[in-house]
Image (cartoon, rainbow, N blue to C red):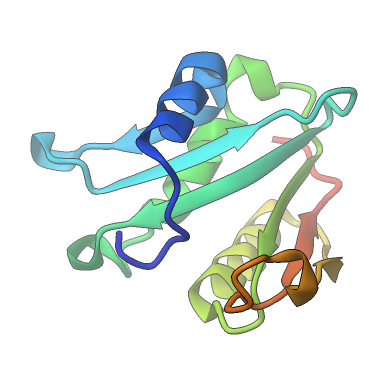
Length: 139
């Protein structure tokens, strides 16, 4: 997508191998247009943590990211999920808008709190990441 933090191909292969039930790829017309990588944190089966969500530039503004997240929440593996979490940097307005709209659609509260400060990122060029939490809700 060009806007996400870079991760190794290996990290994506591990995610799609080990937590495939909570990851999704959108392929309208047979071409990859977007993806969501998420997992159920150990000991917190009521929470789905979204690690990354990305949509190709040509597909943005069509609700694809929201559909990917709603589809994940409807899966059997997420039947106990009542909270959706993600970390989002202050300048990432598209992700902030996505989570605000999803909270409204789910009829749930959205909270934001500090999570990872800038000092935790070794390259010195990363904004802090705040924890966004939607819930409780029932899908």
